[in-house]
Length: 240
Image (tube, one colour):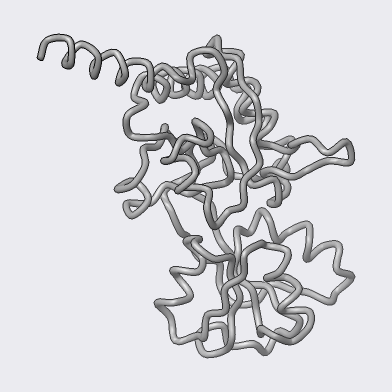
């Protein structure tokens, strides 16, 4: 019995320290400027730069893993990677399944975009990426929700008339609206959702969470996080 207990304890310890050599950073790679795949086929964007700096400050060796959004939490829990750093808002529902660091991006607004200023976002057809806080919000309004696997598909749905509007992070929509040449425009009021964006981790990885929390705190204190936020989201973005 003692050997069995010791063996179980050793297995648990080795599982908890699976990230000790290399921390696998899971991201979507499809949500610029938070994260995207660049021309060299590598993960890029705000969260790539942030994640690399956090790993450096925490003394961790990290590698990046791309995963589709709709399975990003299940694959974290099953051990395919060790963190989620993918523009994921901290919500009570997600916190029941995984753990989060403190936020590295303050709570910001979501917004509606459409091809016409006459759209009623509370009664029309509204597109949102599946399993997002935006999809959850639309489902609670009088609008008809249509969900898509990727953010690009939500924009396409508006452009091809499949949806009247799209609801997404405003930071994601701003460059798309600006570059549309007037085809797309913001409609309705901004919608405050979520409790900021944090790194998702397995609930068993408290030591790893503490390392990232300390690194995030240091970036907030020395101003480098604010500098990074302004670099990727503009001078008027919300900062700490």
